[in-house]
Structure formats: C-alpha cells, structure tokens
Image 1 (cartoon, rainbow, N blue to C red):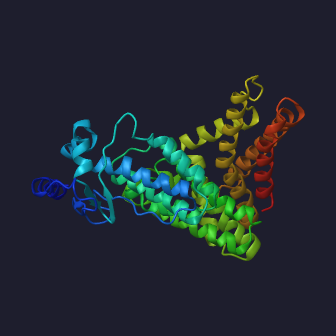
Image 2 (cartoon, rainbow, N blue to C red):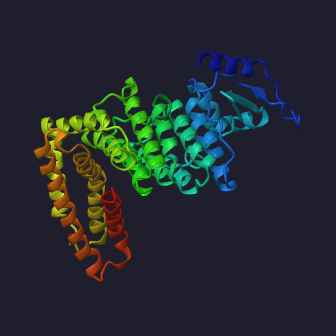
Image 3 (cartoon, one colour):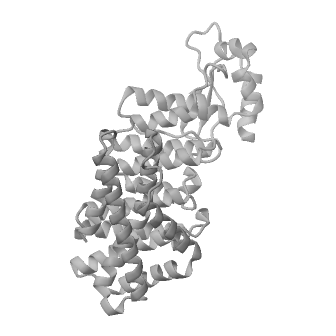
Length: 388
C-alpha cells in the first residue's frame, strides 16, 4: 500500500492537464501481486450481460474504493475534485485488474453491497457464474469488507443447491481468502448434509458413495487447519456422515468393515460422553415429536417452524442412518450396542411422529395447500435414508 501511495503522489506531481487531448493515455497508479492486499478479483465469463454488469460494478464501486488511501478517497469522493479526475484520467492497477478512477457520490453512486450479493446469487447459472461467487467472496475478504455470517451461509446453501459441492469444499480450503470457515457450524451442517445427500440421492450407488466419502474425508482433513479453529470435526453429525458412508459401502458393496468399527466407536463416544451433544439431541428430538408453532395462525410463523424442523432433520438423519446401518454391518461387534440401539429407536420414533404431525398440518388442513412441498421434502429425505 505504501508503494501504491507513492505511485499515486508521483502521478499527481508529474501529470500534465489532459483536458485538450481527447484520446490522451491514462496515468497508471500502481501494481501489486495477485491476491495480496490490494488486488481485485478477475472474473470468468459471466452467463448474462446483467451479471457481467453487476460484477463490474462490484469491482469499480465497492471493492476498488475499499483499497484506496485517505488521499485517494478524497480525490474520488469529493465534489470539488470531480473536474480534476474527469479531465486528468487516472488508472489504477490492483493485481491483474486495471480500472479508471471515477468520481463517486457516496449517496447516489455506491450500490448496496448486501443487495448486490443477493442479486449475484439469483443471477448465477453456469459453472463460471458459481466460480465467480467464490471470487467475489475473495474480493471482499481481500478488501477487508465484512460479509455477514447469514450472507455467507446463504452463499454456501445456494452453491450446494446448484450442485457445486466441489466449490463449497474449495471455499473452505481457501478460507484465508474467502472467509468461509468450518467453525461456523451452519456452514459445516450444510456441507455434510450435502455430502450425505450426494450418496442418498444416488440410492447409495458405489461410485457416488465413494465420491461422497472422499469429499467427507477431505472436509475433515481441512478442519485441522489453523484457519478452522473449533471442534467441528468431533461433532456427532460430522462423524455420523463418515460412518453412514463407510457402512453403506460395507453393507451394499463389500467394503471394509474396519472403518465402520472405527467411526462407530467415535460416534458412540460423541453421543455418550459429550453432555452438550446429549442435551442438543434431546432438544431436537422433542422438536421433531412436538413441533411448536406448526398450528400458528400466522403463515410466516408456520413456515419458519417447518424450516426449523427441516434443519433438525438434516442434522439428525445421518445419525439415525449411520447407527442403523452400522448395527447391521457389525452385529455383535457394534460398540456400545445397547446404547446405539436405544438412540436409533428414539430417533426413529421421533421421525415417525414428525411425519404424522406434518401430514396432519400441511396436507389435511386446506388453508396451506401451497406448502405441501415442505412435507414432500421431509418424506423424500426419510425415504432415501430408509433405502439403505
């Protein structure tokens, strides 16, 4: 940044007025190596002109100003400098991107960054578009612009919903540059349920289950990095996804039983020795059996309650599937077999109660005909799990 400031000062001292030169060359500010402090993201070809414009606006009006020094910001934002910046064009190079400085009115010209990020997700369609979502995250992190946790989680959800589990894993591997970390358990839950779903949606086919296991092992390995401080690798959901995958391979495709034994032991230890996990699971089971606010007369409250149950289902379903399948594979060798059977039975009963309650409220009642898809998703998730 000192080099940037020096180059800027030199440019102002040595430049001559260019107002008479229609095609006068623009002055260059400075350069810095890519993805160091002071770099702007280079985007892949966007799928639509609208998305291309949005990415350009994000770089020019949000990310670039965030890198400027106090003196440079005065040049860009002060009205009295507008004529100067228009008559004496200046270009600034940050990383591999060169942009002209332009006068910006803080009240009229600076777009809402959060709104732009939401629009980015809505407009993204192709592989290139979703790769650009990661580059936008990197650009914000590089510019030290904070992206709120709920926005980061939404970005990860949309990435996963679009089928880009590989990009979600990449975002976590590049946490230093994207700001996405496993210590945000919401992110971990999305990732590991997507891994579970990859295998389940294939009917637990050998190739897809092995790929899912590879993603899970890759994710757990990444949790050991110092960027991901926390205990997510020992969370019962994380271990359960690993267990259900190795158990599926052993049960359906002749896989090795040794990793089933290893992860079953870890999961039972997490369930029986972690008071926090026990308390959490008890509360979540109660939520499934007696979902509050489902009968509320307020539509939004009902939808929030249902989504809360879906979130609980996402977290507990792999635990149930893992215990059920591991017990089948290991038989008498199942670690803490009686306790495993007890937890499996509790979860199975909770899922059954949830199905009955949601059926009554979301199908039998004619007041909410358009939300039966929520019930459909619950049933589908349970059906794919029971297929194992």
